[in-house]
Length: 161
Length: 195
Image 1 (cartoon, rainbow over the protein chains, first blue to last red):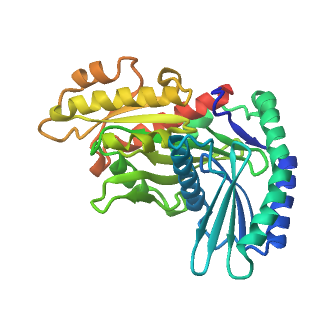
Image 2 (cartoon, rainbow over the protein chains, first blue to last red):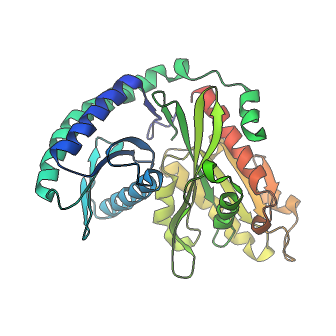
């Protein structure tokens, strides 16, 4: 296991807690969509209107964007830029880091303001950090026992179809 | 690094295509995209310059099917090959589960291959990875070109650790899926080990 980049594992119980926070953030901030994305570009959870969005592409691009911004921060001897905001005519996007691994993305329109979004994001962030910290600890200890018992044949079968 | 979601029963992995400029990394992804069933792929994204050189990365999400009730998804990325985009290349390697090194078989690109491979090793080390311990395959691309070196020569220089290697002509797909499969298999086997 790479200590700098541990594997992310998600369990039912934690996902429920995360989903609840994301749903509430979406309502309280009057945002269109909330996305929680792993820094490597994997979507972890979504709330609000997300069926019309290509969340896979969005996740990858947001992660790329955050990684590039992190690279800029390093060059400027900043630890990190913890928040980013892109303003559009119809839609705007607010991105914040949650702990070391997760990006909290809020997509919003004229129904709300950046101020309200920032305020509500702060609260959600405080609630999310301990959940992801607990997840990281849990995944370190339980992954070997909980991984499905994959055989060579299972892997072969994947490519035969 | 892979993301295992026990809640939605999904395994997500990240594969990176690395190699010198114009070796055919993007062409590999384009071929995979064109030949994959619509329901098994997402949109391919290319962040490229106006002259269609990769600026940041190409991205292609693939669903390979189910293993023991777990959906397996692979996110394929390419890096920009041009030497001066090194900062971007480092970022793409973050969280990688498996690497494919695409070599350009032409004699005139031999030094570029060597330089890129060294660069891969160094950039991985910076992220805490060891190329010798990571799922890894090598592809010798552009086998159809007249200036192509022999596979023996390329292999001796670029694949001293004898990882799986494949000959390819990416525009017509020769070797493209063989390379991908070999890498995906290694990644899943590694995941099973729980490392």
